[in-house]
Length: 119
Image (cartoon, rainbow, N blue to C red):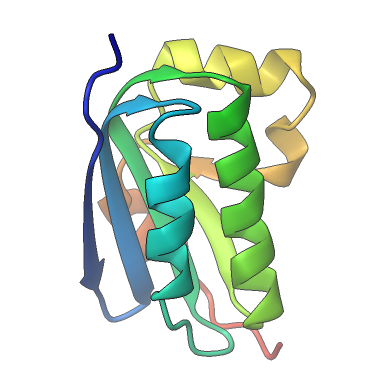
């Protein structure tokens, strides 16, 4: 049985933070994709995915992470991951996506490292 996924989106001074809690799998990935369509990113800003509460991630979850990155790039923004649990980090490393996803230990660290881009 899939654990429900909770998604909270908030605006910050550097962009948007999406906090995910629960299982990111083929059952819940469409919810994240739907939420992404409503996220408006300004060019040069940052989309931060806070994964601290993610308890499981499968290939559909990885696909959502890639879709999030594409959404940010299309807007002229950047994507970073924050508080990635070791079990999710390991999957990202194993499939070779580590260079694609800059990561930070906390959302605060991600915000502190943000530098505006020119698009």
